[in-house]
Amino acid sequence: LLEPSIEDLIMKVQRGTNIVYPKEIGLLLLAANIWSGRKVLEIGTGSGALTIALAFAVAPEGRVYTYDVREDFLKLARRNVERAGVSDYVEFGLKKPGEPVAQDMMDAVILDIPAPWDEIETVKSALKPGGRLVSLNPTYNQIERMAETLRKNGFVMIRSMEILCRPILAREGRTRPVQQMVAHTEFILTAAYVGDTSAHRETER
Image (tube, rainbow, N blue to C red; front, side, top):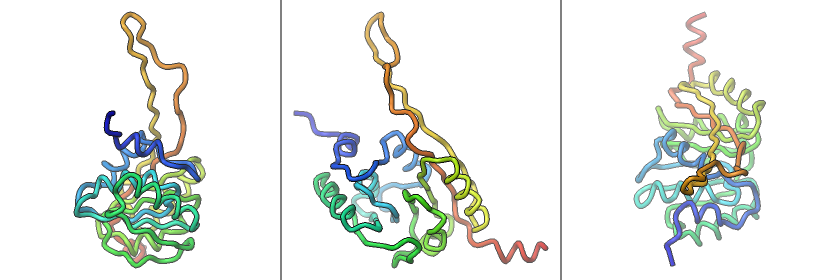
């Protein structure tokens, strides 16, 4: 038997929610500067698929602090993370929308929630200067509102993108794209935090 890949572990989690797909996770890790030893805050644990990928990335010296509004999702995510063998690198917590967290000086914050703008003060308090934010949302309205919120709150390098992965069926003389693919899942919004610029804007006026 072959050892399962990290992609296998992510795709085979027991699901209580939609998950973040590997096609988004790869770019997310690069955009958020997440590697071994980093400290990452995740808001919106869901089923824990992304949590697993984050834990593999920050291990063995780093830490993932993940929060959700629902206890049943946290219980499910704990089981999935334990099954993946990375529970030593993850701390779980229950959190209401907009409620602050104990963590600060985080290298990155990941938001996978319906109203990410509700967490902007939490994000600003948790991120270190220059820290990276990634917000995952499925609709244009959400990323538009979040991008405007970030511009008003000291974030720069704001980018929005969508990842489409088209599998190819490679066979001698008959290579072609597969007939079905996972197309739109969600948009990725990335940004860097440089501090609250409201005082600077007042001076400019």
